[in-house]
Length: 309
Length: 241
Image (cartoon, rainbow over the protein chains, first blue to last red):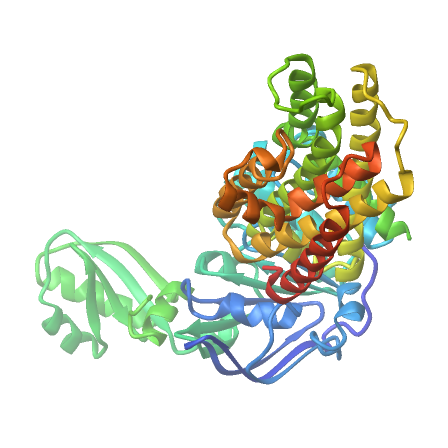
């Protein structure tokens, strides 16, 4: 299963000026990015932002209205047969017939890819040994996702596209899928994940591409995206005069909810000292102080002007 | 060849595991043949009920497998994105279509053997049986009904497709000269029924099995025209996802 993939860190997926229209709807608007082997690239954004449309062009399921896409140097439309042997695809909604049984389905896909011997290994990898004879419709949400992932791995892919892989599954299922994604990255596979769950992307992505309203609004490593997005979060025992505190600290202060505040743009310990001093002078206490980089969802909110739709 | 065999096996497994499909392709034809052969209800004149029924029931079986069963299964596969998912494997569209066609042929062979066996056990006469003509008619009928089934499956949502296929099945059953001779229908309905593919197939099969077809020549022409229209329509309107 864990075969070394060649050219780790080489560009595996290259998208240039991609535009996709579905009828009169502009699904993807002139986006460009590259994803590399041995790295996990997360395409994040709210539902309808253009993530799945972009991935489907890369997988060869739909055509670009304009622009170009190369996956492992191949054209997903013109060289689809060659590409299918080398890419793994996990659809957002399974693509599995409800009466198909787990074991025979994995065996069938392994046969289609000429990897019959991988069957048992895949069953073990995704932890579905106990439901080999169960039909798809009787599986839990997490088991369905794991089965779908197993099918995407049946050809030992060099590039794998995972559309919402952890959506709607429990903690253990998420842990297992995260661990498989780590293994894929470690063996040099280019892993591309489309997800609207920003905290998931934050956990396992090396590179993040942020989609909003059909466009890429930011891209880079998590550190790149968080650069200049430092903050201090704190809670107070009483409501505070935000304007007065902001003047005192020299940074913008905003209220998150009742008695919870954020000092934007810094995580400097000297500012924390100034903050506690100001609170003492005003007869209140500061609790739950946390300083550091912002979470990805906060960065996303700022990039998109707070508009998640 | 290996991929085709694997996909054919998968198609047959899914089909045979589906109780509704089994009822449709085996249960209903055998039940109709047995019941109306045993109970003297049909206006078949001097012809034994089982001799009248067998050709129509074979036509019904072809319709059940090639149109309704294939159409409903494919429609749901499209809705569930099964076809799309298979599109990301080395299987390819031609092998997928061939596997589906072969699964229909395998089922139809089984249906023919079963129905003829049941009919013989009920006293049917097979002295006029023309095997080559019967098989040619079944192949042509399969082309017609699979074309219709896939056209509906390729355009309609899974549940709507299910209702449409079943509704059409009922219309073609009642107006197909399957349970009673077309001559028993009122004038206008009779004229319409004569150009339907189910009636044409039943008529050809009646001629090839018992030599009692009404107008086998024109029935061949009608079936051929339907085959061309249905296949072109399926090729034109079928969508994979």
